[in-house]
Image (cartoon, rainbow, N blue to C red; front, side, top):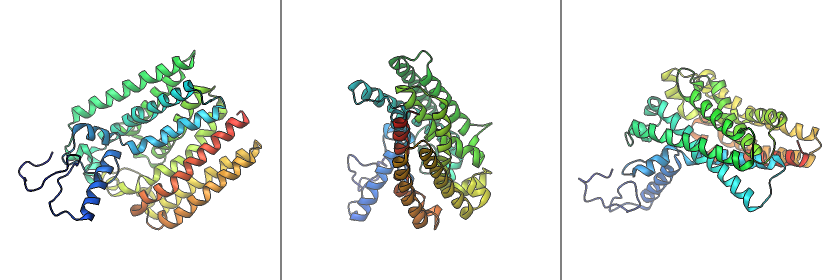
Length: 346
């Protein structure tokens, strides 16, 4: 909340922090960036003076919804049965609501709830360690998103005419995976390999399965291929561990940067990202989808370039810059793969 004892600092009605009368253009830009980061749930956010609804949105980290929603699109494409009819568009939009704001929002808040001690060290500006929201309010939001997500999943199963509630089962399974990833006693994130793979599968395989099941028949080939693809997601998940290495080390969490050191973990990260995308390209060649395989390989080249430019040189400082520059090519490669699978009728 804005401190009422400082009347000499007028505030913008849309601002989350007071603006000094003599604020420079650079200070104004910094304040605007802080507000944007707050709304997206990004590193360096500002919670001062924010309304409870902005804080709730920040907890849900909207920036993290995008890969899951993209996974739904990939699943729809790989089914080979998506059409641009109004009904299919509405189905896809509802499924993206499930994957993004509801289930990913639930996952992010669950993670923040159980990571509040680590965040107090690594990211004290986050809503929970900063005291901007109370723990009972956080728990209420977790339950609201979880139950809302399962409800929407059931609606989608009925809409798709499923005899077995596949999407509901995926929503429940995904929510359980999120819980054991963040919560004791299992807390998968304490183990660098298991935790990062669980995260990678949550971002690639599970939403892909959901989108595929909504428009087609989820089959073992799609399940295995997307689990293989999730090993690239494991590499992306490692990127997120570099910003938390000090807190992880203090609290005994065995993230890969803690186990192997910064430099070795960075190389493991980029090799996982590149090698398993290459493996998917090889599979596409094996099913005679050569054009799609070539496009996928071309998508890997800029990722390698940005890995050399940013990530391998300083993974702690350049993690966000690397993801912003390289990750679009990874997610576009996912769609290329999905289109190939749909075209081949896999």
